[in-house]
Length: 521
Image (cartoon, rainbow, N blue to C red):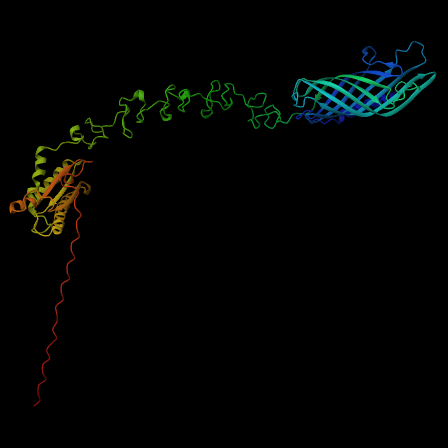
C-alpha cells in the first residue's frame, strides 16, 4: 500500500512538472492545470454507496488540460482514493482496504462551443470520456484468508460537469462521473458477478482550474489578439474590452486622436464639431453658426472680396475687384471713381469723364483746328516744316494728359487712282505719327490710318471741296474707348501693295563702222 501511495504522489508531481508554462487552455491560454477534491462512492459485492455522501471516500485529483478547438479539450488526469468497507459489524472477519490510482486520458466535449453558448460564457457545461489505467493495491481478509495483492487494469470513465469562468485564467468546476476498472476485484470477494465490471465507483469532483501562460497580445493593450477587434493600437493608448481605443464622445474618432474628446465631432476635423458645416471646427470658427470660408476663419463673404460680411461696408462688390480693409473698391486717386471703373486710376477726374481729367477748352480747340495746319510736299508723304509747330502743340497736349491716346486719320480727294490715293493717305498719317513718336510719345498711344478718297466731307466737284477733303484729323480718346476715327468712318481699309516699277531699258549699242583700207598706190 505504501508503494502505491508513493507511486501516486510521484505521478502527481510528474504531471505538474510536465505542464508547459507559456500557454493557456483557451484559444489564447491553451494549457491549464486543475486540482480537485473528490468524493468516491464504491459499488461492489458489499453493496452500493452510490449517492450516499455519508459513506464517501475522499481523495485528491490533478489534471493537465490542453485546448484543441472550441469544442474539444484533451486532458491527462490522475486520482487517488482508498476504498474500505467500514459498514461491516465489529468483529467481522471480512474487510478490505484498496488503494486505487487511476490515470486517464480525458476527452472533454465542451458545449460552450459557440452553437448554444459563447466560448467565454460564465457557465460552461461539458461531457468527458476518459479511457485509462487503474493501479490497485488490496489488503484485508475474506472468510479467514488474507487479501494482499496489486493489480493493473484498463479503466474507463464517463462524466458530465460544469465549469464556471471566473476570469480568462481561472475557472471553478464541479463534475460527476462513473469509473469502471474492468476486471478489478476492488473488495477481494471471491464469488463475483458474471460481468467484469461489477466493482466500480462514482466520482464527484469539485476543483479549481488555472490557465497557464499569457495570452498573445502583439499591440500590448491588454486584450488578447484573438479578441482584439482593433489590432495594432499604438502603445500607451487606453482601450475598451474589445481592444479598441476609447472614444468618450462616441463620434468615431478615438480619444487619443480626438482634438475635442468631450464633444461629438467629425473625423475630417480630428473629432471636433462644426455646427454650420463649413469645414471649420467650431473652436476656430469666428462665425460658428453661419457657413463661411476657412481662410476667413469660418465667416461668410458673399461678394468674395476677402472682407467678411459683418465688416464689409460695400457689399456686392463685383468679383475680382481689389478692395480696402472695409471691403470697398480701391480709389487710388481719390476722385470718387473706383479703380475698376476709373479709366485713369492714377489721376483724378470726374465721373462724367470716367475718372479721367478733362481737357481744357483751348486744348480741345487746338485738336480740332490742327487739321488746317498740317501740310505735305506735293504728291508726297513728307511733312512741310510749317506743320511742325502744330504737331509740337499736340505733343504737349499728350504729355499733359498721359492717359489719353491719339488717333490720326488721313484722307485724299478723288483725283487720281483710288489705290494710289489710299496708299498716300496712309503714308501721310504715318508720317505725322512718326514725327510725334520722335518727340517721345510712346508708340502704343498713337494709332494712324489712311482712308484715301472714301470718306469725303465736301464736294469733290470743286477745287475748294477737294482741298477740304485732303485733310489729316486728330482725335484723342480714353483707354478702353474705341478710336473716334473708326467710330466716324468705320474700320480703315486694307492698304494695297504698290505696283512694281518697270526696270529701265538698257541702251542699244551700235556696232562700230569699219573704215575702208587705203588703196596702195
